[in-house]
Each structure stands twice: as structure tokens, then as C-alpha cells.
Image (tube, rainbow, N blue to C red):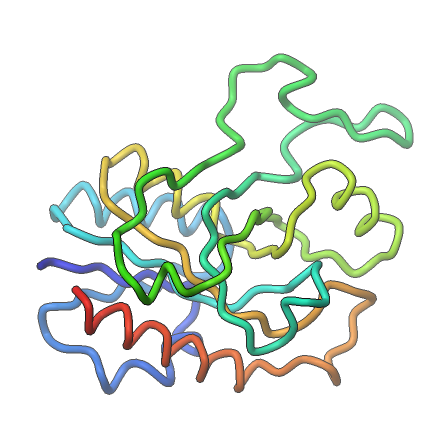
Length: 203
């Protein structure tokens, strides 16, 4: 089986790198939607993969999904695509412009390691949330459980390329006013590596 693992940063792969076999390709895209979309699309056009796996950390809007929790993102939205109308945000859907902004993984790989994870609704953003008003507003619009800066772009590239995929993320922090002292990035990366190893063992 030909597998592609995609991560935004080398750090998110740091606990996993030594366990990867030569038949697993790794793509480090850089942070953000544009870098992820472009580099994923190029990789998927050049090589036919049986499975693409996006691994990374994320912030959680749900206190029940605390730091260290690993989740499977099955629906992702580009949250900032739209327009401002004074103090109100108007979604791209409401504007009725032709754009893809919601991505659903309706056929993830049938693996027990994935089925054992919480299946969550995510948003992908350019600016991570850290203001109580903007957090409340985006939660009302999308009911997200987690957020990242790349997930929807990865899912879009896989859907366009017709490649089986999964987006797996470990919570590093709760989405709140920026509080780096409460972040548990190292623990999240270790938990992410443990889960990714289980997924790879089943493929």
C-alpha cells in the first residue's frame, strides 16, 4: 500500500519519524491553507496513493476534548470565507458565490484505530481564535469542536484527487484567550504519534 503522510511542520512528525518505513512518503507543507493545498495537490498529481493521512495538532472548542485528545476530523469548513456587513459576518453560502467551503470525508479508511477516535466537526482558519467575542461568533456559525490552519485544504486536495484519506489531530490547547502556559504541545505530538502508529499498523 502506498501511503502519504502530510503535516504542516516537522515538529508535528518529531515523535513519529523514526518509526516510518521507506514505503511511507512524507510531505511537510508549511503552515496554512495555501501551502497545504498547493503542495498536497502537486504530490497527489505526481503519485497515486492508496491512503493520504493528515496529522497535526489543533485547538479544541470543546472542554471534553482536552489537551492530549486525538480526534478524527470528518467534516471541515473554511470558516473565514465570506464578507463583513458592519459587525455581522456573512458566509459565502449566504452571499451565493460559487465556492467550496465545506468538506466531508464520507468514506474514510475502514480502520479500527480510526473508528476508536472521536469523529469531529472542524474549522480551518488563517488566524487562530483567541478573542471571546470571535470564539462565540464562530461557535454559533459552525458548531466546531476543533480548529486548525490546514485541514480543509488537505481534505479538498484529496477529494479532488479521489484519494482515500483521513485527517487526524491531537488537541494541544483549548481555544480561549491566548494562554501558552496551558498548551501541552509535546503531549499532543506524542499522542498523535501513538495513534498514527496504530493506523499504519492496520494498513
